[in-house]
Length: 140
Length: 140
DNA sequence: TTATCTGCAAAAGGTTTGCAACTGA
DNA sequence: TCAGTTGCAAACCTTTTGCAGATAA
Image (cartoon, rainbow over all chains, first blue to last red; front, side, top):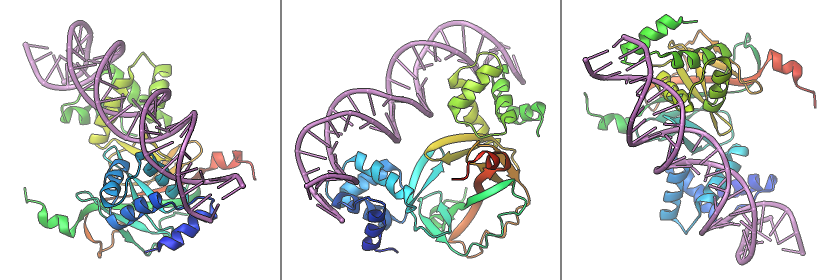
């Protein structure tokens, strides 16, 4: 996982700053290992660290998304964000606990040559239930 | 493309009804060939057909998503919906005009056996610019 | 016949904005 | 030093809900 220093450099490159509030929120997101709604992230960050404002959370998520360090997910009408290193990979998303596992090794093979246009990027997400959550699910 | 009659049957199977308002909105969505925000769909449907309410649009999109005939997309913070037949396929999404092209022939090969859990479903979307829009983009 | 659907108006809820004070680089 | 950031409160929208009347099946 990328160090805070590296992330700080990435932010600075784009004229963004890493304040102590942003660091608190960022660490909360990174260490959660999950995708979180802005509201959830705000709550968690408040619990784990100093006082931060919801506005700050929204603004940080926007910045992180812009520089490719966070990715939004739309699940059942709700928007979540996950910390997401900038290299190309895919995701396994647990629909129960919202944990994200990055999956590396993209063959790029499924960018068909007969695509009806120029492909800028693609996104592959697998949805299911992680091993922890499978055990907890009652067979019904 | 699925006929209205078929869609009506699918709706009825789940105790939903196809009213003339829903038919108007549905046809607008199907024939647009694009992903649309609820607001855009509402505007288009009003232009093309009789008077419909925005609430009706929201409720139809919810129903269609539930029975697998519409898919939501999250693009730059906005939620769009596309008509989407219920069989498994992928998408090419034009970031300029929001047109959607369905891509068939999924190898399923990228559901790795070493996935950290049970995969319920996956989703692969390609984003780029369709041939129409490439021509229009000024080289800058 | 009746469960479902409609549109409106109101409520709710999530997200953004303006601003004065603060702070990282 | 000063451009970028903060948190608050207010503004903004998008989405949902309640309801009485309409309608598909």
